[in-house]
Image (cartoon, rainbow, N blue to C red; front, top):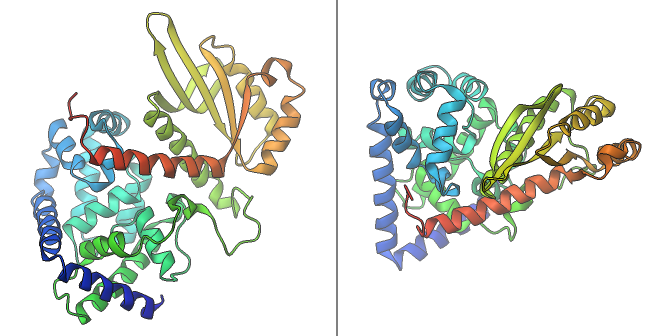
Amino acid sequence: MNKNLLGKHIDNYIERFEKNEGKMKEDFKERQEKIDYYQSWTEEKILNMDKNDFKKYISQLWAMLIWGNKDYIVNKIINDNNLDLLKEKLAWFIWSEEPIEERWNSFRSEIKGFGPAMMSELLCSVYPNEYMVWNRRAFVGLKYLGVKDLPRYNYQCDGEKYGELCEIAKEIAQTMKDKGIKDADLILVDFFIWEELQVEKNLNKIHIDETTENTDEIVENEEEYEFIHNEIRDKIAEVGQWLGFDTKTETTIADGSRVDTIWEATIGNMGRVIYVFEVQTKGSIDSLILNLLKAMNNPAVQGAVAVSDEEQLEKIKRHASQVPALQSKLRYWDYKEVMDNYENLALVNESINKLGLVPQGF
């Protein structure tokens, strides 16, 4: 990490807020209210949550700003996990004394709908001196400071890596303390990163690995196939939700056809329109073609999209050209464009939802 660059921005941060003391007090107040709120949710209180409690608990997170209709996403999380299991795992994740690496990896593997941004924000709010908020803004800020080996994808942020990131955030907090911000904790580090270190013109560039020549490979090794497959699958579903579709993942769409993601819309009383997506990270392309061909047996399916890297998409196109029944309905989407579109839409939704134009419960 470039300590000189960090020091320069901390000085700028202090100078700016000395000129606007009210803003500094407002930030400190917001930070303390967040800590007080989440620390009040004891293990017992979490275990006794009802559906409305859970909604209130999750809705306070900054990570939820990307969702205008919070009821929709909260209901989806509950339906995907079962509320009792969700409460049990959440209470253990937050309050267990087991190492963070174990708690993080176990929660990620067992509970759907929680990414690193939500998980880390919950931890930071309860333990502001121990755990940082990890999200795309933190990536941009630490990358600007010259920190190496940052996780570009959610699956790369496992418990061990998250622990390493928290140690880096603690270094930033200590430097802030050394420069006179005595109450600096990792929530304030998050405020600092947002205020001072968002120097990348395009936040969607976080998925570009500038140190690797071959950036067209969708995976780096065999163990990553399943992880990046699932992340792309889930991001396609979230993009569809932001566009107004009902979405599902890993769903049977026709006899013999189970697809990664669907976007579904109901048109008046005329019926459903469905678009299916298959993410290809490995395996037989002929099997992919056959699966999508079977999906077309569902009359509601109006189109299919194959998602992969540039090289594999060309192979899929060659195979599909031999299948007239599929060729006209098959589209191709580079996984890097999926990631870029996700980041751009997330920023748009977050910005618009901050305006509060549509009240909750509308």
